[in-house]
Image 1 (tube, rainbow, N blue to C red):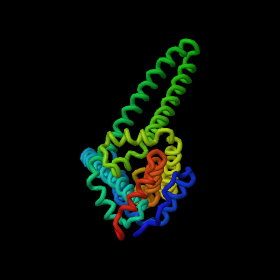
Image 2: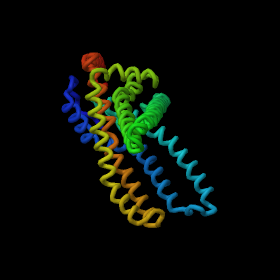
Image 3: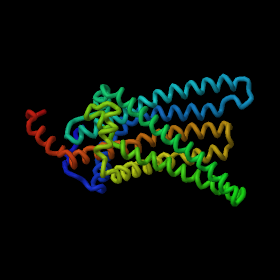
Image 4: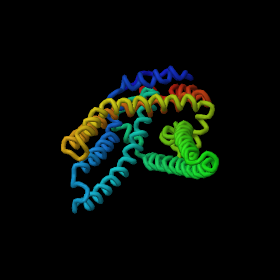
Length: 312
């Protein structure tokens, strides 16, 4: 599969999104094939979860054994999923890079190209997840402490009603702060995957590199991520929500609910193969756009193409 030559120049946000969607449309099966790997994992995890709901009811002698097996299975699936997602993100980035330079590529070639960087990509996802979890946990604990103090103070003045209002308000601010924190670092680290794959950086170095590249452009990065998240979750919910609602009406643990849940999980996983590539395509193109703006990458690539031997 050969990509069309890409016009290397700084893009407006609208042009960047249009190019991302156009690239996805022109090479649909390439990116769907890449995202099939994590989609199979997510579907398998959801099917295991739904199937467990139809096993022995609470209080049954087999429940403890089943629960232990279920937890072990989910743990294994989470480890597999970490690797599947890391390699898929890297492979999609490689595919975008190849298309940017008008080179042939395929699903297999993209995965083979990302193999040397797989360890760093896994470390990157682990490191980002750990940092975000610690920051959000710290914010929640701080919010809880402030909520208790505010409740005690206002409780002395306005009674229980004032304490309840203060606690609820502080909790709301804490949740908003947690989402804001995740959004901020999500945009700050938005192009760290391309930095690992295309510049061969370590996980920690890629975070610093991403912060450097996205500086003064984080609003654009945020809008790309927001657009992709809305499309991804809207697509999955559109196909999966009817089955979730049907399972709720059928009643938890019933055979029909389990069948509907498994069917919804399979359809939702299939839908994620089609909606999942949009974010990484957009962020990979954002990476190129930022380097063109800040480092004249377009001139570097043009010179490399002139130096390349004919037919390469």
